[in-house]
Image (spheres, rainbow, N blue to C red):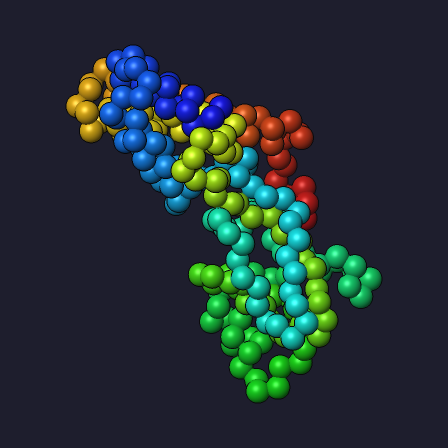
Length: 215
């Protein structure tokens, strides 16, 4: 679904307003606002998850800049190095002060394959300088493209009712349109339930969790 189709749906929900009406600029801003809110401080949908992405640490460097749109680390993989020394190394996540105390307190840090990392505001700091170029792999959540033009982003492709409901609800609140507030509130809640329910169903399809099964 393109942004223009989402705008048309909100136009319909606030009283079947004609295309090109004066509120459309506000509708677009509400779509962007709703997306920003849904991508912060909440459980994130899996369609924002970037899986097994390469992360390259260059020789002589102890850090890598975070990619554009980075939201947070994925829940499962962490950061992994495959094949160096003939083994798979899963790097340990540490808070920054623990990383400094454990690996950078000495004046003589030996370059090599890092074994731990800390995610900072703008970059990932590793436990050592790289003695060669290393390619790690990781999962992370990435913000969808902002709806600043008439595109279909990840939200409109995968959860249009959730985003449209959230944006429409915000606009209807500003307009004082009680009927539209109720309508869009129901839409956003139903959209949320559909996506989260589908993700839970997908996880359960692999079989029930058993306590201690992986010990």
